[in-house]
Image 1 (cartoon, rainbow, N blue to C red):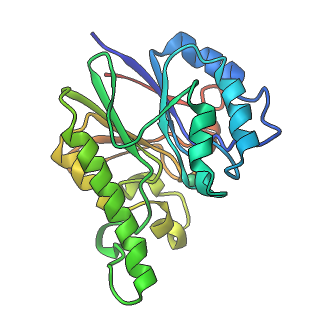
Image 2 (cartoon, protein in one colour; image 1 turned 45 degrees about the vertical axis):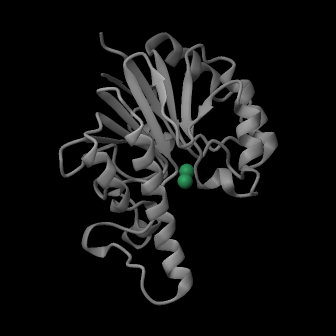
Length: 236
Ligand SMILES: [Fe+2]
Ligand SMILES: [Fe+2]
């Protein structure tokens, strides 16, 4: 039996967002079985913003699963943000979330660039740390995938694992938008589909080298392409 998955990202909730998302959540609740949110839940990582998102999510009547994005780390209160949202959405850690016959895993991910322009861990310590952050995120993802026993596997990331879905952004910022370092576990474990955000001006769809579909579900991007339906729905 197929499950209908809705996905979105980059809500960037501010203290003025009250009422902005509720009709979308009502709409999604009618159309899908589960909603995935791929990070940047808040604009500035403020607890007040998380409170407002929590109120908006009261209008969502289906399970919500997601990851945090870079903005949610802005004030270093990510653990408090998770606590505020705990009742309304499940934020993935290194354990899978099982929904029916689907295993869902996720990580924030990180930058580092793509393909032959991948940033290498060389030179200054701080640059090596930058690269190691992405490697650690890829390891987290791999560990969570190792625990999955379901045939259907969904990955949620904030940063992009492939170049294709950031195309449309300025070339200069590609290394800040994602990295191929995240793609290997996705291909190795034969993931069914990947959702990410962060590239607000990127492209909506791409594929890994092994042909696994990758969807950029950034809210500003989808709002531009399909204003009536700023989320993605797939059946798996
Ligand atoms: Fe964002
Ligand atoms: Fe972001």
